[in-house]
Image (cartoon, rainbow, N blue to C red; front, side):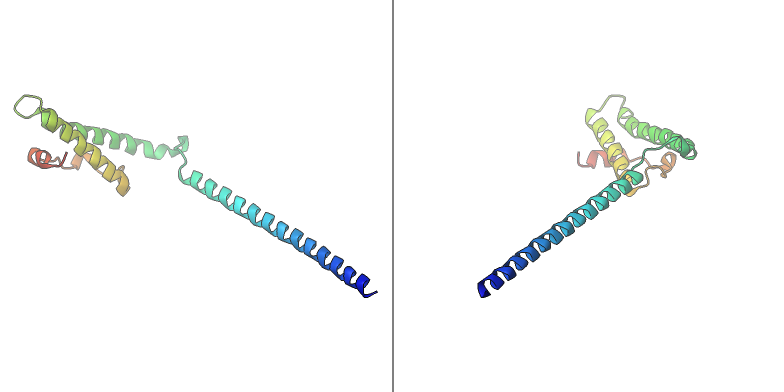
Length: 135
């Protein structure tokens, strides 16, 4: 009798463990589903931040066009510094001019003010400072 009773308890304990395993599996599955939902929400939030401009962004176009024109004119003025030197092309100085423009644009972009800089008022570097700059 005692052996049968003992076996019955063992069977009940084993059944309880199986139910515990099922509960644990359910909990793991719920946690994985929550993690997937959170990851999806994060991706959606990133997509909202990085959304491309649409036709509804018309208000930014005139300023953007003016900024592009001002930036282009400033870059042309900087690059013209190399051509203005003694009437002959100075390739090293021309490269330094291009590097200066590239670095200034990258800095403005990193600072988040690329579109708000008044490029028509942006100072030009001196030829001396360009020649002394690390290439």
